[in-house]
Length: 51
Image (tube, rainbow, N blue to C red; front, side):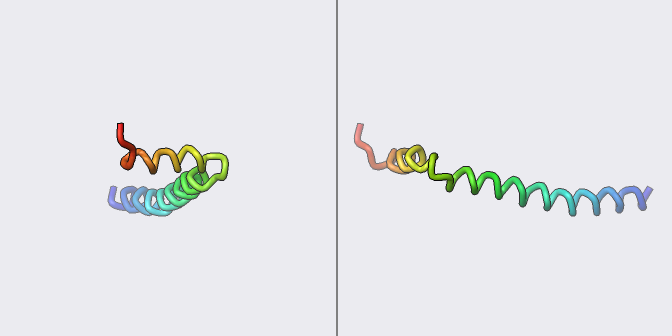
């Protein structure tokens, strides 16, 4: 039982880290993609608009 847990925990730690690094890279690429710049610039100005 303990060996199974340790094996699963090791697998989860290793591949979980890989998963989150890849996910972070995808989100970062999306946020910095030039096509999305206007959308994010508009969203950044929302707090300064007077309605």
